[in-house]
Structure formats: structure tokens, C-alpha cells
Image (cartoon, rainbow, N blue to C red; front, side, top):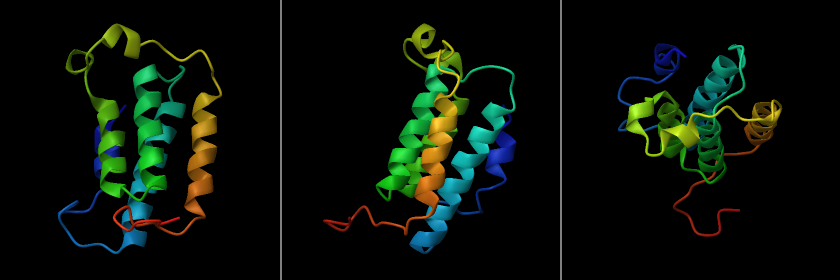
Length: 123
């Protein structure tokens, strides 16, 4: 996988710049979508680590934590030596449709308005 493709989607000054919530949400969605596309283009099933990172990113988008979503997506590029219990995480998933399921969940979230994780009862 190529981290430079995802880094090119992130504007200068992120996350310290001020962006409206809809721009933060769109950026997080683009980064996660780019990650999914990269993994799908490889002739293998995603690893447990990649699936975990994408899942965390999608949950963070749903909850309005867009910076966390981008950071979780970037965690996919961590090396095997940077993760505890790497032998468990680097196994490929057995479900070859799991990534497609996450892609569909991300598509569902794209149609929803942004949320603010700091506002109580934001649902």
C-alpha cells in the first residue's frame, strides 16, 4: 500500500486548521474510501489489522470524531514491528466480503449529515 496517495488527500495544517464539520466529514470519508480502494486493488484479503483500522475509522465518522477517523485510517500503515501481537493482526481475514461490507457502511454514512461529537444527544 502507498501512504503517499492518502497523504495527498489531507490538506496542509490538518487537523489544526479550522474546517466546518461537513468538510471534516468529507475528508475523513475520502481518506477511508481511498484506503479501501487501495486494499481492494491488491490480490489478497485484508489483514485483521487493516479491517480493525477501517472499522475504527468508520465508527469514528459515525460518531463525529473525524480527526480520529483519519488517524485510525493512517494506522493501517503501521509496520508489523510497531504493533503488539503482530502474528494475530497480520493474518488475512477469511471473509473475502468483509471489506465490501465496510465499504457499503461507509457509503451509507456519506448520505448522512455531519455530527458533532461534543454535543450531547447528537443523534
